[in-house]
Image 1 (spheres, one colour):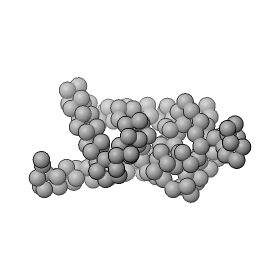
Image 2 (cartoon, rainbow, N blue to C red):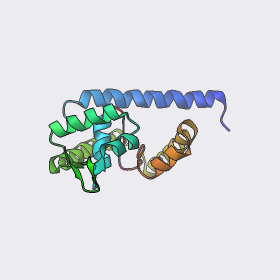
Image 3 (cartoon, one colour):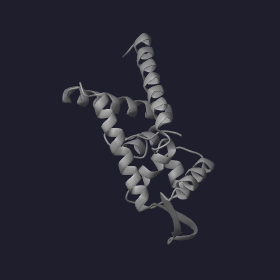
Length: 168
């Protein structure tokens, strides 16, 4: 078991990483998808989803989900259509423009990240992935409960290897 000082050092580095990503996201907001918008599009990849399910999957409130979908809809990145199983509900789906923008955004982000880690070996990357996956799983389970860990493992929370999800 790690001691208080080690836990403090890890937490400090995580806060610094979060700050770095937040600053980078703020700089890129003019031309990139960030935060909740990015997470919503990632959840819509290959499937149509109800608004409430999107909110639940990304742990945001219904008003945040509504505003996010409205913003994505006004940018022609998503569209709403009636839910064939429930006439009272609608499904949100990604448009072709949304797919292109998501792919471009993810490609740009991965390229920038790979450039930042250019001096890392494959071994370094594998170790980092393993540690981050363990850390994420433990944090979700301890801080949010086992049901959130199951959601993360199903690709509904923070992702691994393929991208990330941030709050706006």
